[in-house]
Length: 155
Image 1: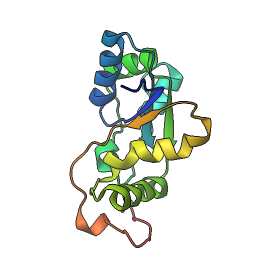
Image 2: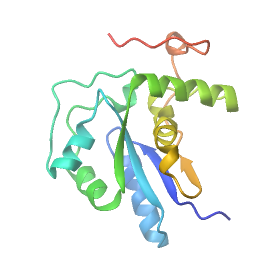
Image 3: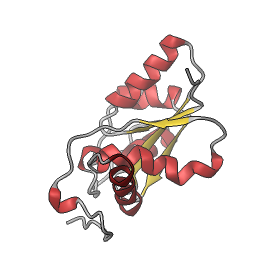
């Protein structure tokens, strides 16, 4: 069994990361938990940094499972107390993670599902031990899948 140093978790409404934090705490582990949000839907990173709910006027990202404008207050509190940090990733970084997951594992992840890997890839230089990602979300829509390159467009 490998002791994980860091786990990257996508943040949509917050239940997933809160569950990972609770499980880590119940097991008495020291694993760092890093939340990942889309740059265009960063209400959770703004709220955690401000120590209060910080709604946004929009949530523009093709990672629709993360397109949240108003965070859950309870989730913000749990994340503030239990997460090491929150990383913001661009839609381009998320799209690259979708392609990496498909190329490496032949799994089709949608944007929110691939966001945790985007966060890990963005922070790989600062990692010092074994790391993992939570791959979540529903299946990607065919029109968003650009394995050969290209950038998804948000309308």
